[in-house]
Each structure stands twice: as C-alpha cells, then as structure tokens.
Length: 405
Image (tube, rainbow, N blue to C red; front, side, top):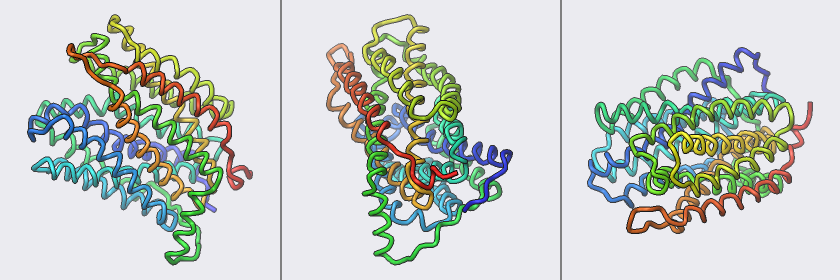
C-alpha cells in the first residue's frame, strides 16, 4: 500500500506532473507551426515534413508497447526520472540536429521517451490520488495540453522568429532538466509490487494486462477516442484559412483562445465528474462535442470572432470527453498492473492518432483554388466514432481493487 499524501503535497505533486505533461505536449505541438522554417532550412518537401510529425506518434506507440513488459517492475518515480531524462536529451538532440535525417532520428527518440513518460504521469495520478478526487486531478494534469496551446506554442514561435528554429527545442530541453531536478525532491516513490521475475513471468504479466476483458474495453475506448480527435485536428488550420477565409497571420489566436477556454473547461469537467459521476459527465460532454465537430468541418466564411467561438468550443468540448474518459480508464485496472496498462494504453492512443492522420490524408483533397475538399466527410466520420464511444464507455467497469474503500 502507498501512504496517502497530505492535500498540500498532493497539490504540489499534481502541479509538477502538469508541468511535465506541458513539456511533453509542447514538444509534439511546436513542430507543426515550425514547418515552413524547417522546410526552408533543410530543403525538404511537405511529405518529408509530414514524416517528422508522424515519426513522433509511431515511435511513442512502439515504445509504449515494449514498455508494457517492464514498467510495473520499476519504482514509478525512478522510471519517470529515467524516461524524462531521455526525453530532455532527445529534445536537445532536435535543437542540435545538423540535417534532416538527424532531426528525424531525434524526433523518433523524443517520441519514444516522451510518450512513455506521459503514460507514467497518468499512472502516478492513479496511484497517488484517491478515486473520489481523481477526476479533478486528471482535469488539472491534462490542462497541460491547453497550457501548451495557449502559452507554449506562441512563445515557441516567438523564439523561433527571434533567433531560429533551434531555440524552442533547446529552451524546452532546459526546462525539462529543471523539472527533472525538482522531481527528485518532490515526487514520492511508488515501489513496484514484488512478483516473481524471469522472462516468462514478465511476458505472462503483459499477456494478462493485454487480454483482460475490462482492459480490452478500455483499450477500445482509447483507440476510438484518439481516432475521432486526430481525424479532425490536423486539417483544422488549413481548412480555416482555405475554406473559411480566416487570416493566416491570426492563426495563433485560434490556439490562444481555444487553449484558454479549455483550461477552464478541463478543470470544471474534472470536478463535475467527481461530483456527478464520470460516465454521466462523459456522455453529456461527448454528445455536446458533436456539434462543434460538425461546425468546424463545415465552416463557411464568418466574421473572425464567430470563427474563434466555433474553434474554442471544438477544443474545449473535445477535452470534456478526454478528462472523464481518462479517469474511467485509469480506474479499470488494479494498481499493481497500472504502469504496464497505461503504457499499452498510451501506445494504442499514439498509434490510433497516427493511423487517423493517415486516413484523413487519404480522404481530403485540394481543388485548383486551394480549398480543402471532403473535410465535411471527416466530420461525419468523427461524429460516428464519438457515438460508438458512448457505448464503449458504458461497458467499462471499475477494477475490483479500485472499488474497495
């Protein structure tokens, strides 16, 4: 058993984990708006730049699958420190990359370390926070995504414009190093449960995690959620500019406004989940999120303020699905299997996102005037997948160890 933290230390731990999540998400997000600079710097094509983006997802997914076999044999704190240290070095390698192949390799490493570290963050929240407060805890930690959008991406772009594209990565690496040093002092140890070793035992534990019926339902929910979101997100900015006439120079406002609203929404939904039940809040949020999905994928030319309202609703209501879903998924596994489970779950999320981007690229097209075609079809497909998650979420069960007082 893990000794419960007092509320003050619990708050500090959650703020630290939120900062870790912020750096991981920002490392993934900052690459996309740096596309024009990187294409000029290395003389690469749009498809080669796309490989830089997808390399992170697929690497994180593959590393997560491998980590499933070993993470529950490690102290959670030690595992996170090692993974986060590797992430900091990989991000520094991105800043120092002298060529396109070197940058591609650095992105593979950043995805491998960063993706598995993110799964450990979620596992730690599940281990350290009592189930009755876990919705609010996940709301806080997952607001790191919104902070990356509202503050991290604009700051990274400003640094890139002020110096060059290397600067955001070197700055992020320095921040990660400082956070790692703070973690050594603040983060409590979560020792592994003593179990027999040996390769056969490790494989058997991973197999038990992978084939448990409740885990399979959780994995299905994660996969469909990721697919529904990543279908729409990659072509949001291009469609706003090409189809809705949104000024390209004002695109940062989409992330600033949407991120600010999402910070509020994630924390509110987390508290509501603890009070009224995660499944109920998930279903309300999922149904409500269908409306802005259809709006942004069929958006006509509108005044800029109305467009910002639509995109802010899309981003914030997407988070109202993720927060209660993550709380339910984390509670679906017993604590001693949570590290491997969350690693495998994160791997499926990353792989699902990468596949969704590929499917979206296959569906959309451009006409001679540059308009994005068939984006509305993606919207309908995303809404259909969200509908499927309503059924999947209802079939998820709390693990026996989690349901005990």
